[in-house]
Length: 305
Image (tube, rainbow, N blue to C red):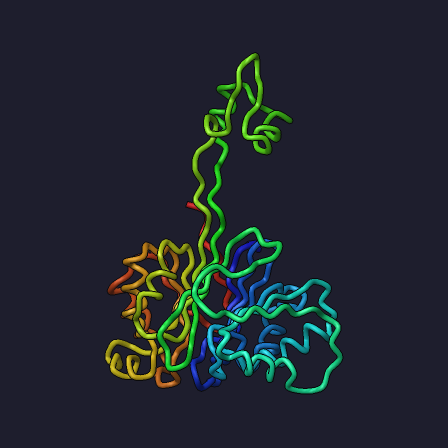
C-alpha cells in the first residue's frame, strides 16, 4: 500500500445521495494522516475505508458549511474515545471559530486526547509541529470565508549510483555523505552535489468551495495531486458563479495551466447522477491523469518525477 495516498470518504456537495456521502478526505503522507473537510457521516465512512482515528494527526476545515464540517463532532469524540496518543492539530478559518467550538463540544463526552486548534486568520504558512512538510493556507472566494490547503515537501537530492561508483563511495561512507554533505576519500573531499541530482519535493493541493480566483491557481501550481471541487458542468456555469463553485471544465483548465500531474474531481451536485459528463468535460482541457472521485476510492500520490 502506498505511503502517500488520498482516501476518499465522501464526494457529495450540499446534499448526499444514495451513492455519495458528504465530503471527507484523508491524506496519508508517510506517518501522517491529514483529515480534510469531514462532513456528516465521516466516522462511519472511515470504518468502511479501514481508517482508524489513531491515523489522524491533523484536521483541516476549509469553511463552515455543513457538508464540510458536520462530521467534526463525531470525529473529535472518536479521537477521544480511542484515546489517540498523539496531539491532533486542527486548522480552520478564524471567522468560524464559534462553530468549531460548538462542534467540538456538541455533546457531553470524556476528553482524553489533546486537540490543538489553529484558527487561520490570513493566508500563509501554518504551524505544523513535528512535520516534515510545510502547510499553507490560501484564501478562496465563497459566500463564507474559505481557505484551501497546500502541502509541500522540501526539495532534496537523489544520489546517483553511477557517480558514487565513479568516486568509489560505498557502505558507511554513503551515510556520512548524506548526513554531513561531504566525505573525505583518498585525500580529496567529495561533496553531495558531485554525486547527486536535485529531487523536487512532492506537492498536494486541496481546493474546495470557491469561484475562480487567484487562490485556485496558486494552490494548484505544480501539484503532484490536486483535489478540487467540480460541483457543476460548464452548462451550469452561471449557477457555479452564483453559489461560489467551480465547473469540471474550469477545474481542468486550472490544472492544465498549473502543470498538475493527477487531477481529482469531487464535490458533485446531486443534479448529476451520472458523472460521465464531468470526465468528458475535464478531458477537453486536461491531458494528464483524471480521477472522478468515488466514495471509498484510494488515489496514490504519483511517483516522484
